[in-house]
Length: 104
Image: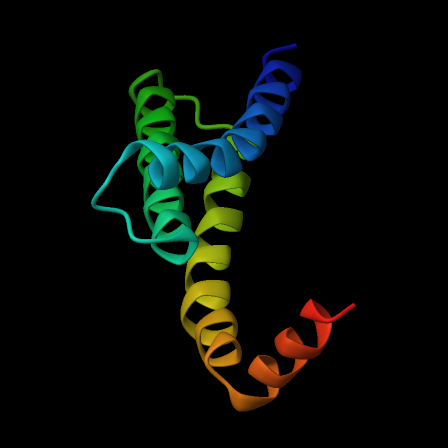
């Protein structure tokens, strides 16, 4: 039963990340846009999940759901932010596509 509860909690955490992005963009003046808000939201999610895993480790029973969620957020942070999104968003091809899409 505890495994099911942790999978449910992990599902909520996936919905929390985009909400954190919007909070960072609209409520924190030092955040310049959605790219930096995504970066800060991913860091916040990673901190939350590390804390949850630490509390499970203290109880000597680390289960899979929070570890899987942390792996997902780390992969998203590393792959999406640093390998895929940043180079793609600054490319001339993407700028041309975005300008075309804006005319639709």
